[in-house]
Length: 451
Figure 1 (cartoon, helix red, strand yellow):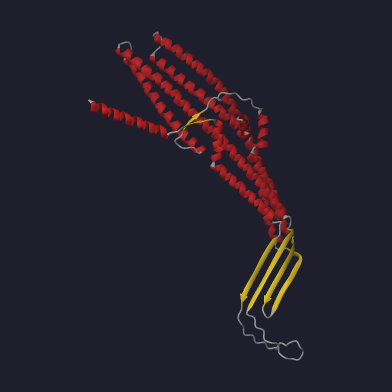
Figure 2 (tube, one colour; figure 1 turned 90 degrees about the vertical axis):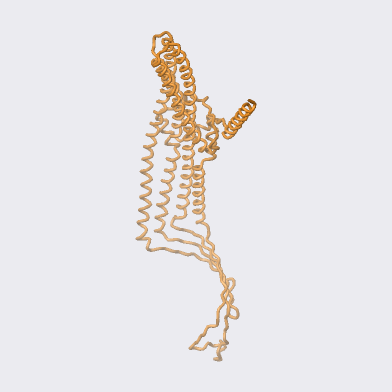
């Protein structure tokens, strides 16, 4: 007997230790929407890639500006030479007028150095146009990064409330399962006492099984949504997130559709980035036309050389103006100019196309938000109606005025109404923020409302 008690105690201890390890392996973290967005912005790999693109555009702008500064080149050499065989047919005179031959010159080494500087004075407006183009492209890259940030904020909000919906579904189905299990117990007692038909007990057991299956599905959806959220925010994948739904169901006052369209055209980062690229294309056309002009530069140089026993040069300075012109550009540069103009026209039509697309997106986001507001109102009423319907049906059933099927149907309708209402409140917040994201204002609005 003692050995049996001891073995049970050991088994119980092992179970408790296992449970403790499981609890320790899964950390629980309370997470507000503001914290989720901040984590997403901090740990986003896509934003880091966007930041690198901005850095690249900044470097390209710096490179374009550097073209207006002088080019400075320094070179030098030290050479060892042999004694070549030189057979002059005309003897060299010593220079003294007596006709005697010049002394033999032996050169075994040569050293020289030179420095050249060139400052561009005029390059057919290509330098200035290059700086303008790079400036516009840098602004476009910054706006692209802002667009990526807006999309990330909206995706984080959508993922947050998607997880909230999954958790709400689990909670509601668990509560419904408790009721179903209690109903089965009650029906079983009634059936054993001959007060309930066997068929009605089977119906309640079938509904209990259906609710259990619904719970398995809900828990699976919650697990997937929780994992995806952790991955998005850079958290431990095993972290159990507890979300805050206290802000759900709040109604927001919004502007008219025309005002939303104007806000979107004035604030959408991707549209403004396209306009910046359109301005950059104008500078590219100017730079292409610059090849028709000559290049003028101020040049200067210094040379020093030393050939032992023969020649030494020092203080050899030269300053001047250099002009270069590629005559072939008169007939070759036309294709380059046409290509630049074609790109400019392409960006022009792309901007008009995006303008139309933004208006359509705003209209859709606006209508979706209004639709969600109506759904919240309707589902709220449906919850009250389903609750009252279940109460009445339960009273009728208790007084043998309603069938078991009627009672079970009322219970399912009540669960579905509660689910629809919770989902609609979450979808309403997502639709509201989607409207602001479509208008390019989600970052400003989100930061303002969450201060």
